[in-house]
Length: 450
View 1 (spheres, rainbow, N blue to C red):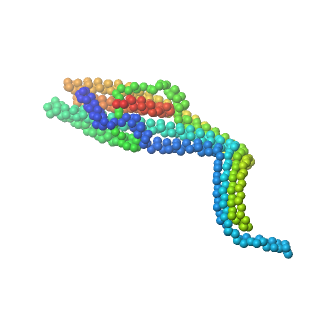
View 2 (tube, rainbow, N blue to C red):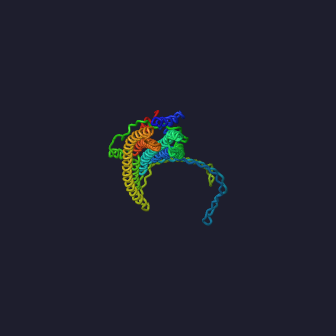
View 3 (cartoon, rainbow, N blue to C red):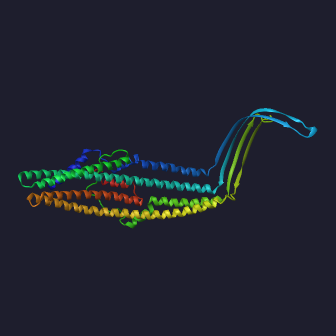
């Protein structure tokens, strides 16, 4: 009976793997996610757009050049009159039709505009903040892909275990029927085995529906239904990753967390905004220049002209009073800075909490794997002894069925604990801000066939 159970388990798990040679591992799925996930694509587009902030900020410190041109046609009717009694006289007048043409080039270069230079520095901060946002999106893609991958693996394993258990119970059912026919067992043994088999059929339907739903989750990330996924190896180095101290992980998170970095940049932006608002009180100095060329082949008095003019100079402005708007913007910026400080502290506390929770999840998963490994050994021994007792007539068919159920439950719980540990390590590193592709490569190496 023991050999039958183990053979059935190996047959179903191994047989399903051989049914589809194009199995995919974690890195295969992640590469497809990088190419097809819509949330990741949106994050990259947002980052590309944010890079333009730097160019826009730099433009505030550079010259501006404008050119204007005009061409006009005019029809005029002009009469000149004089006054003064007997000395009155009348100038000749009449209608005139003429064209005027012209163009001008104007240049302005800021020599001292404190607001512009501060805004340029703000654009650098905004770009750095956008880069951290992209890093968060990358972490999210890694964790979402890993979560979906291991969810499918777990559903996949449940189907395999149910299949193996069905094979074992089918053998038990056939044996119970044969024993009943020769009179060595009662109909109760047949009914019990049949009931267990029917229950497994119902569980298999649920497991297959769950498996399909979880595969569709991966499809929403990579854009296609995945093949059969590579499962974890039998022996895994289950332990807490270095450093094995929770507070050290918290310290790493406070230094590396992308969310914390974003809030730090937000505080920096708020401080720069105070400087920019205060700069509204300061004078400005610009270098200005222009060239103007105007031509007319006539005028209202009948005389045309060509005129060219070139100017260069300095333009100095001092803001004296703007209705209190500048002082109001300063107060607004100071309040925003305080909000940024509060948000930073809240982000730090949240990061610390999430990191501690992730660490405890890893520690719990390690303990669960070890406990379930021992439970599997115990359930295997129980199945062996129960099967032997059944063969010698001191145990019933129901006892064997219960032992089989316990064995397969222990096998399922162990596999689930292993997947939970693999995923919890990824989430811990993500919470600390140190997760990268090398970690996914290392996780992939712990899968069969990798």
